[in-house]
Image (tube, rainbow, N blue to C red; front, side, top):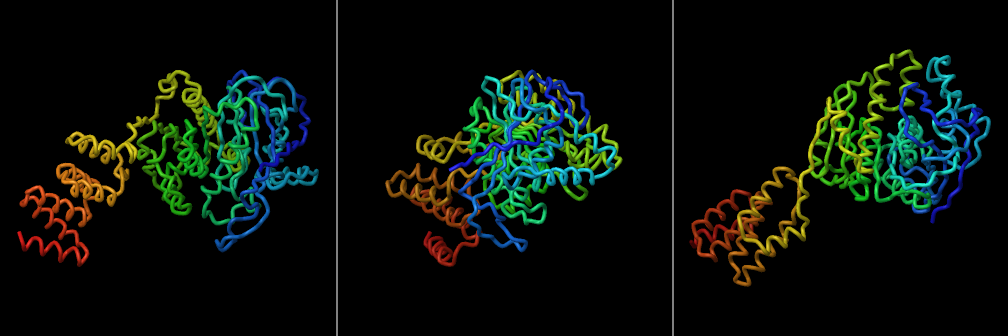
Length: 496
């Protein structure tokens, strides 16, 4: 059950006017034809707890309260509504845990916290700066692709509102919800066990929530992920094949940190081999001592694009970070702003091609440092593979399997015990040639299993191929079989 309340944002003092590319970075964008509307919703997820999942020691915490869900939606809008300032976006932090009205004291606190980031003369004018978004503006008619924005860990939904507003002006609906620790009232001290799994559930909820929202085209779905939010975004795409495209903004999948996230979350779908949605990944500044990962290269069954930015600072594809942690502290962000603009334009062009079937001319437009990996043909499912085994008895099938394993050594066509059983079924039915094929395929897939060499040798003996049988029995002995199997094989060899 989903309980929904529309939450009003603090009214901006700026009068509504025609949409512009106004933004806190002062980047001169060329916006699309649509004005941008924004609505904040409060919902309850009764399937999960609102409290922390883990305490400070990493032990599970039980709580019966339903999980509060703050959901922000940007959408193509008609004239109307109140133009939002950046202060309005900051005020979203107040309601990330509750749908209580935003008090003057809470708003003043958000303002003071923002000004404490650095030079007040730099930051204060940004608070009242108008954005492209209009609070509760009426929607325009149409059918627009849905994009989910997954923020980095411990962060809210507004940090990349500049990019999101530009995207929506080109005809998209964007939905987001805060990452786990913010939604649970703990900023930065919570252990990250289950981060991707928890955020995965949040974004599944947000996507389901959008069925209440008009004009959404669920046939075309994309994801934009920031840094560690990419782990949730990739896992969502790998478990929901309605997702067609992913944009990773300095995502964790680009560095060895993805290995840590895979270990912490223990989620088997957070793997490159399961990715089917096409991917655009922006490589940014890598932390000292960190290394690039092979995740993107290993996602063989999706079309992937990498773009290497020579970013001056880590997390530079984050509008809030650029003004608070850099500009307000006297850092020169002129190059970072150019990179942010380029990343925004490339994101829009990429999603236009993947979700709106626009031409692929964006590849030529952005071909300077773009690395492209073409998608390989998807391997057969277990059912398809076993069907081919029963129907074919040719070397071509073995060649096909070997080629797939060169591309993806981790692909599991089927289990070894199943192939072994099927081989014995054929052997018991006196279909020796078919049995030999099943056993030989098992050795191709599982070459380190002594039991499978023993099975193949047994079938070879039955086929009258004693020299080959001896070779495979001896190979089984080399693989350190169980004592029982070892004695059995030695007895057979002695008798031959």
